[in-house]
Length: 211
Length: 102
Image (tube, rainbow over all chains, first blue to last red; front, side):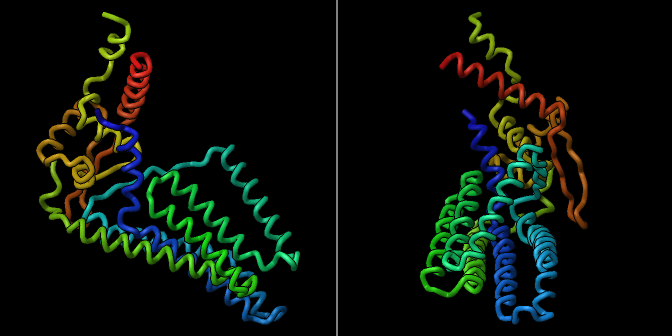
């Protein structure tokens, strides 16, 4: 008997077969880590510090935009000629889910603000980043059902806790966490990409198309 | 005929065929997919895939668009609204049948 749910899940999973998503996401996290590190070395109250604060939204939006473009380009060059073209449905969040996401985001932001102004717990921020990252990746891993994302979830928690234990400091620790987790994503993505390229030779498109 | 079996008899046979069911299940979660993707995911031969797609197209369940990406021919397949409704109905009926028969 055909297992419909397995087929549907496999179709969603196929998006991640080439590892390009992790490489792209890892790149964003590296940029984010670099940005936070940049902020820590600029003297407080200096004009450069103000520029850094203004640049925050720009860095996130532009890196997201850039990564999306690069991901599409790489999919066109690497994935589609090998395993075919597929366009996924764009899922619109329902108003209820948007509200829930907003509330969760607000609670996390409030929690971080509280922690950031309490000096005794400032040092725990990298671990907290790691645990929150681990939770988010775990939810994603559950949805997608790929083992490597469970491993990345554990890696996020381990990196966050290790950085806190190493006593790197709050801001530098956070930047180190994002940098290391970004690097972990890129390594995972590259390993997946190598396996994918070995397994999926380029198809002869002239003959691959029919109907 | 017992009511349990009547439920099975009402099932859409065009979709119930395993290869076509796999195709429709794949297309139900994507916007569109090309011939190569469908062939890779289902493991069907070109001839078989073409034949099943033709049957689904004839029933109005899928739409096939022949296009080009650069100079490379590209056959894009997508589930139509009728196809999506038929798939939903198939899933509901089959689930009901399985629940009744245990």
